[in-house]
Image (cartoon, rainbow, N blue to C red; front, side, top):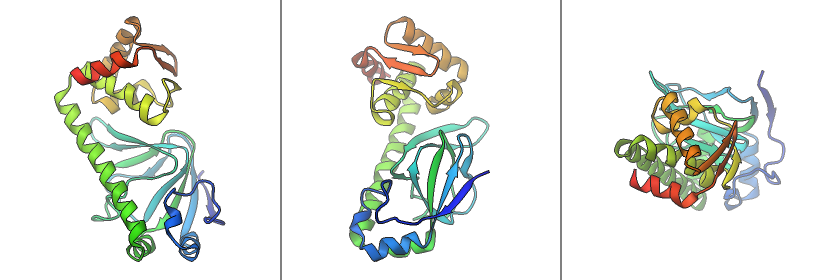
Length: 229
C-alpha cells in the first residue's frame, strides 16, 4: 500500500529541485500547499499510459523507468532523483503517452497540475528552466529512437551499458537495479539476445558481470562499439 503524506517544508527540503530557488519563498510555500508526497515500492506503477495528467511529478528520492507499453515494452529512459518525471504531457494535451514505474523504492512529489502551470507562467526564469528540461529530455528521446533504428544489436547493448555507467550511476562499477529483461527493453531486443551479448562482452573482457554487479573494464572499447553501431 502506498504511503501518502502532505509536504511540510518545501523551502528547506534537501530533495527539492535545484532550480526551485528561482521562486520566491511564498511561491514555494504555495506549491507545498498543493503537493502530496507519495512513496512507491519497487515495481509499482506511478502513472499509466493513456490516462489523464492531473499532477506535475517530481522524483524526490529513488529511480523510475519511463516506458512505452505494447506487445513489446520499450524503455525510453531512466529518471534519477532530483528530476521532474518528464513534463511534455503537462505542457501538451494532458494525456500520458507512456507509463512510469518505480525501478527502486521511490518518493514522488505530486503537485496539482493547474496550480503548477499557473506558478510557472508567473515566473519566467523558473519557466525557462522547465522548458530547458523538456528540450533536453525530448532531444534525448529523439537520439535514442534514431540510434535504435540504425544500430545493430551489439551497438545497442553497448549504448545501454554506457547509459547506466555514465548517466545513471556515474561510475564504471555499479549494482544494476534492472533485470536482463529490462536491459533488453531499453535496447529494443529480445531478452535472449541481451543475455547472449552480455555474455560475449564478458568473455571478451570488456565488462565484468556477477548477478546485479557490473563493472566496465574497457570503457574506450565499449564506446567504440557504440560508435560503430
